[in-house]
Image 1: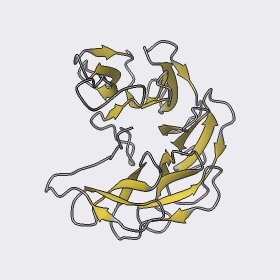
Image 2: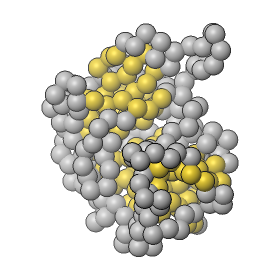
Image 3: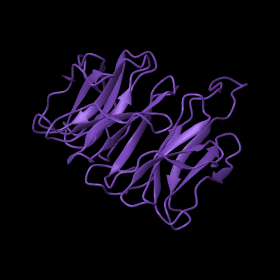
Image 4: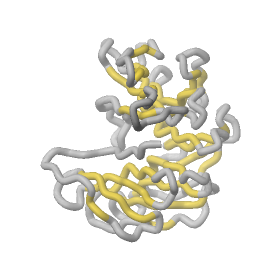
Length: 247
């Protein structure tokens, strides 16, 4: 994924939220989108969890990264360096119809679909620093949601589409915030001298998982949606990062 500092790192797995039964003997396989440099360049792939079959969806000399499934499983938004600097693209789930959605000489990444599939939130530095923006799913109607001299990034929609959690450095170090979907009422949820980032909403919208190094290394934490009850979930000397809730 493309992290702050704009460094391309190892591919992340993102589980599709489309039509599967994940438990019991009748469990059906899910499709997992991910990016990998197994071919020499970073490309988008998907894998059938039942058969293990992997399908290459993109094929470009510019790195493709950070796939994000649309809620109905029909499309995948992703970032790409093919038109340097990186921009947001969308394609059909089979890799066809690859279409550029943003077109600015700026770094644009972190695509996140709204629950109804009508909008995509993303990060852009088109106005001088990293801020959270939103656009219609076809790329039209791009508008800025955050306005701060510090970096705002990693947007994550609440399941009801009314809120967006994001990471920000506006108070001196990286913390988790939440705002209304129109950018209003930004509220700080975490308060540490450490780095808190990568917010991810639970399916019922009651909790937010996130990454923090507040205890010495990067671990997964969870909190209530109002920021209360912050609890460490992982405990390992290695780094744990980028939580994602099962659909």
